[in-house]
Image (cartoon, rainbow, N blue to C red; front, side):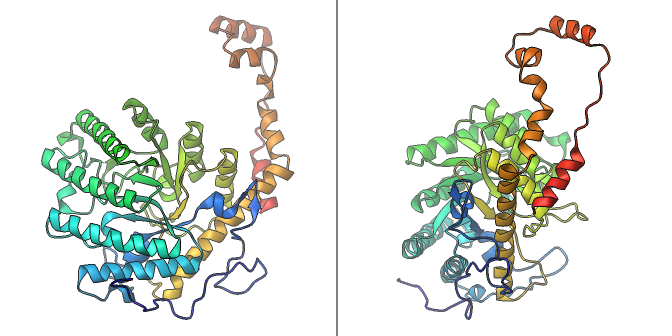
Length: 441
């Protein structure tokens, strides 16, 4: 390949094998067997695991209190195009060795933004062609692309919600280029995350006008992509705050209501991120359930937060209890609609060895695989489903069924209440359900 390098960025690490739970090999999957069939699909088909370009290949371990600690070999070149090619070489080597088939990116994860809009466009086109060749060589695919319209100072007051039209227009131009790159790379979906689409204070904010602008903006982006032949899904990724005090896509329910209000629900679905759910004071499984109920469970950004911290720590998922409950929702919903499981997670600041990236992704994949296996056993072999159904059995016949069918009015309910008198309490058996999860893990 023109301009490519033969450098190996992860020497001594071969493709990660599946060895089973009895293996002591830290560089092997214990539960993730991509070809194993669970509930009618292979694990590979269920998950479509993806690597997050930004955390895995752009992160350097910096935080507000210190500079980066992770000095990776692909970060050495001072030439932005060569640095981008080096990063792509490292990325595709890593993804291939993990045995995953997908990656996700923001536009300027692929290459450093230029000093001008024109230079940024030129750079993005250059690296898009290079990445396209890497994809052709390896068979690795793009799960989704997106644009970073939140990091540059120009977006300090938002992108589509910005009170300055010229900033909104600049965001539109940037998203056009990101859509062009996504389409050129055969991307299966496209994500919108509005990190600064919100407010810091209502005193200087016209919320109604900003929401209208976002709705129109998303419609323009959809229309452009469709005109270019894009047939994939658009995803909204909810988050309640950070960096904004309040984000308009606060949670799944809020985002679904917004999409319906602006007539976008036929093209857009929800990309649920675990740590965003907990920041909204929800569980991961709650957000999955809300999206599934609306027929909008599109994709997952897999990570976890820290129970002691009130911010988006983006740690790799290792909580088997939480993930098992989430996989119960996942399986009951029939899986994801178009998306996959993207590891939107980063190794810790004091994890500085190359193999730490592998350990992190192996652990994340094994957590989801083990949870899927557990959830499938619970559904297939336990009393879980029948017990849940029993709780609602009064709606399966008689007056309860008539209520669900819309045959009763409020006067009917009043008369039934008079006839029934005082009612006996019925236990929800929560502890028994919780024990059932533990029994099958």
